[in-house]
Image 1 (cartoon, rainbow, N blue to C red):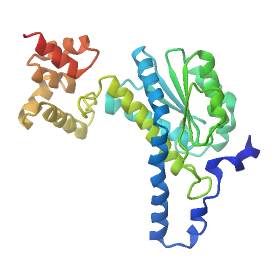
Image 2 (image 1 turned 180 degrees about the horizontal axis):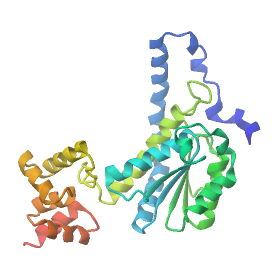
Image 3 (image 1 turned 120 degrees about the vertical axis):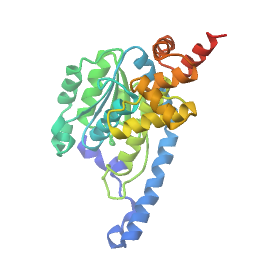
Image 4 (image 1 turned 180 degrees about the vertical axis):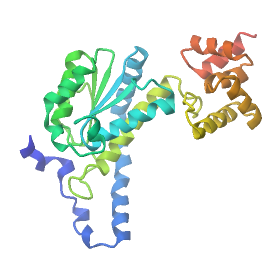
Amino acid sequence: MIEDIQYLTTEQLNTKTLNIDQLSTLEILQLINKEDEKVALAVRDAIPQIVLAVEKVAEQFRKGGRLFYFGAGTSGRIGILDASECPPTFGTDPKLVQGIIAGGQRAITDSIEGAEDNDQMGEQDAANLHIGPSDVVVGIAASGRTPYVLGAMRQAKKSGAAVIGVCNNRDSLMNQFADIMIEAIVGPEVIMGSTRMKAGTAQKMILNMITTVSMIKLGKVYGNLMVDLLPSNTKLKERAKRIIKLATNTTDEIAARLYDEAEGNVKLAIISFLANVDCRTAEKLLQQTDGSVREAIQLGNSMKK
């Protein structure tokens, strides 16, 4: 409820920045940086809940489920950002992780602030996506009570989906719909109520953690290399070849040859070299090990003994 805004942590007056408009540029930047240091600590405190979120997302992915982010304004844009980076980074289908923002596509670049107050719109947007029991819905809102986000979470709960809440205030309204609640309490903003700052940064860190660790658990990372990336431009093609080189400890020339033989499939290139098999066999090994490069290599080598 709007009249309760004064009680939200994210809406409090930051006593450390009361005179920020009288400081030098250097002093302002140092002050912002000092406040930003609190973000990582707040996220660290929320790790036990983030663990639960990651485990649930990975579990649902294995069942063929999808991950949806619902947010308004800054929170919605952060969800879209994280979702849009998954296909090029991890080679996922664009439908696997989706970011939904109150007000639709136009709200990504234009401020449509009134859209966040429509809980029925959130409910309808979630219903239109045919969200079901195998899916996960993450509601994102600094306040923890944005009507649009609550509406989406409510509909997701009705549909049997796993529901996760991400906010920056304690004991928010999200709790009534969330199976898992992640609260990163970053404190009052440098500029009162400007939650695109510390709150938004915390949200981005949390979403990065959820998708990155889920993808690691699905075998999309070998060592710390993104072996499922889609080499869709010159930079990514060069990165793919370098990943092959690093994973196999070979030369640039051999890495380039492996890349070509595997038709740009980094996983197959690595497996074929380290298990000493052709790409067709490497593909079969990868299928048998549910996409795990490490297990595919081990399987390929064990079959020769």
